[in-house]
Length: 376
Image 1: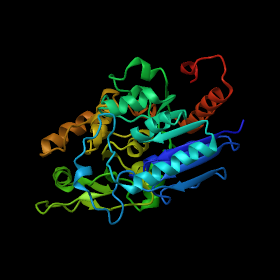
Image 2: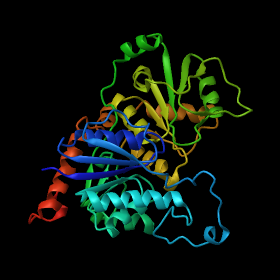
Image 3: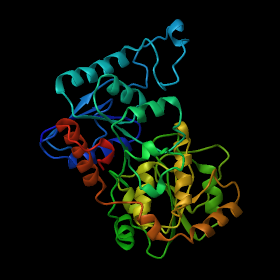
Image 4: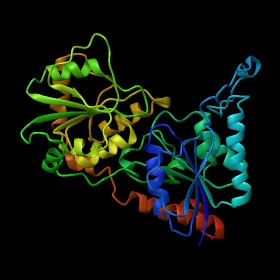
């Protein structure tokens, strides 16, 4: 059965776009899919039945915007996070989405992520699916979005679920471990040949994500200096500071086109707790130290703790400030079972998610007798 499905995609980083693409490309070709996003250049190839509708950013002031003090000082309701007054860009974005609601007669609207748009869909009488992220999400805004939703999509394994999620949320949650993340990793030797790295080198890889300011360099200089016979490589964004003194075995490579090869080539890995980063490393299975970057609602803090609790990584609250702290973390990381890491990734996550969404869409369209909570 053909369904119209809308999908809001946050444009910070690329993880939201990559998992959205994985989901919509796995949907039946009869589905008419519209992606709403402030950027159109962050998506991989999309199926022929998928189109992108550009909308203004919901989170950044429009060019030339001048705040009006009376509006800027107005209190924000506790059920909203980002809802400034007097931004014509938000007015335009909401108008585009609600006009699509009115003309497309959608079976589902998916939001990854915006608590406000989840509530907007509910107000507009459109069934919504909300993407669930780690973090302290018990505030009124997030709870309103989760309560408003027909279903909740968690792009991670149930083993990484937080203990504070209430039963009513879990009852309508579909888990899609590693959704949108490449799960087939190159062979270590093959990856080293591709990158021109010695087969006998002890390689420590530091992976920094793209959603924040980057990984601080000084702690890395301490770790690399403590292991002069190891080669420390960093990929991604690094935050340099004037007092760092980098040893010769620490090389900053910046952004690379093939992070999977670097992950596969590494003997040990240090990373932030971004979604794509976490699942790529889990798929590889390596001694792993995870250190969260700052994110809203402590998203990476909670995800790092979940990884530590699952036995998949050594989770640190902050960067090691001396060599002994590095050595202790590596000692614990050596005890990790790679099987526990690989269990956190499902190569068929996109297909399973697509079937779940299609079942939900069919359910709301045909009004069967089974309750929505039983659709999994």
